[in-house]
Length: 364
Image (cartoon, rainbow, N blue to C red):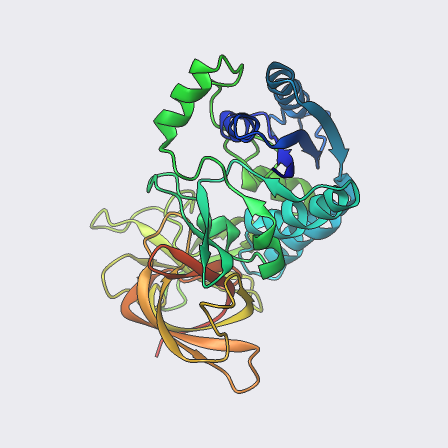
């Protein structure tokens, strides 16, 4: 059996993941990643102390050692900086994806490796299976909870040391098994917020660290319809919170473009053919290959591409550039609100091949 470090967030998913490892006979140590302390709760509820106490209580119930690993400095440098710089540049970063690559399976793994651990386990709804003699990530069996998307930017060496003990279970069964074991977190509500920060709205977080920079909201013809508070507070495809009244026909507007050089937010009435909202072709970069034996980044192929977490994967043609730094994705069907900076996960069926970052959207 292996010596496994279980990343425990204080929620039911990582609690049961730890319990299953113990039941399998592994030598398990639980660890809470202390990434952020919002002591004054100025940007929302940040229950880190409560989460630590819950994680520790579960570890005590299971009879495993528990540690709190302080990674706040690394988190600010590798995740918060990435997040803030991305929004200031007018793109839409994904801190949860980067937290997995840079923190859980990055900094935390380096700490664990020095302590003699063989791998790291998390409560992700994903599966690890062998393909062509190497570990590969697959979608979790619960389609409503599948979190393989958030693992898209993992490197091959990170996939090798990762395990996902609850990936074969649907969410209701996770809670049932946790309750049967008497785990304190069995009925605990799932957190909604930024990875390992807490129940914090992204808008509130951004407004704490980035000054508002108001500008015009314009339609496709350049007509001024209102004023935005700062381009970093808006996402392409966003319908709510635009503060622009519907048109005479009660049709609502949707954000379709940002123009940083003019500090303009462009909106349009949403239709099936709204300009700048739908596209089939894009350039992706920062290519990451989670399954080298199954996916050669240098070869063209057909695959499934998932542009966002809550979005179905769609069939696309992948064509790498000559220098191998970027690739073109050509979707079979137009996709809504492809967004620079966001992560695009790449699949072969349920197998996660890797990930990428949208760099340019081609509308022609």
